[in-house]
Image 1 (cartoon, helix red, strand yellow):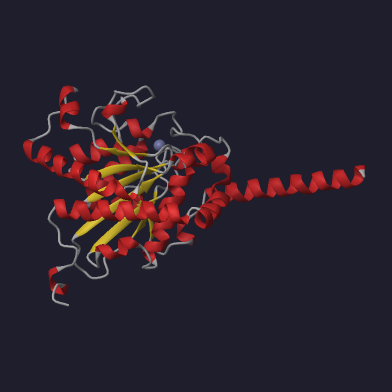
Image 2 (cartoon, helix red, strand yellow):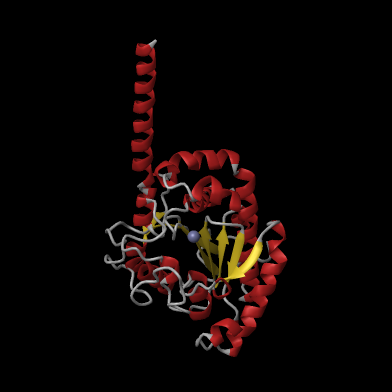
Length: 323
Ligand SMILES: [Zn+2]
């Protein structure tokens, strides 16, 4: 009996060890093995310094429009907080559907291209930490309302190589819209209001404010596909230096933050070992969360359509309009 128990424990230990090692190896996955479109910020910007603090590539699955013309390019980013593995899983799931032509996002038309960056904080993802290698919350390190934070926002705005890399990516890729996917709670985080950012010293111009009003209306309209979700802003939450505030107010990119539902928070994100099992969780998420993921896909699609409307971009290139 004792021998049988010992044998059982040994088998269990070996299995656990195998799973841990396999998951750790896969958590550092080279996206090039799965996506022929895999590249990196350092390659897209021709700047080899734009890697993580530990020198890891910031991988991007960069798609091209089906035809030569391009009307709009979008960014789907996840993993800025390295311990929110559900966000990276969703970005990978979406990228996989998009490159196969199976996503709702493909209906944006042949003149649209999308970049997917599932691991925006690859060192944090490997270490299962919210912050980067240097202990900085990257989603507080951008330069609109920088320093308004209860967490470490870095020594200055853009003090971190990962946020510098994202800034350079924007300069190279000229996005129309962007979504930053997180895995914390059932919120959509819109850019902060003009009133809030003006009160905190940032002065937007009238045209950008008018655009903001339209973007806010879009949230109200499209959040119908996410029942139970609340609309927040960084400033409203007491958080400055957020990605969507910088992307919208500084870059003019119609951006938002999508938090994966609150169930994820309790099931996944708050488990310290979650990212060690990210690849196993990814499979489970693909199988069990597909309906949830499809709802998020619908929301992202609708917000990208709204972004194109606000920027007055046709969903189809003019040459194809008559077909
Ligand atoms: Zn987060």
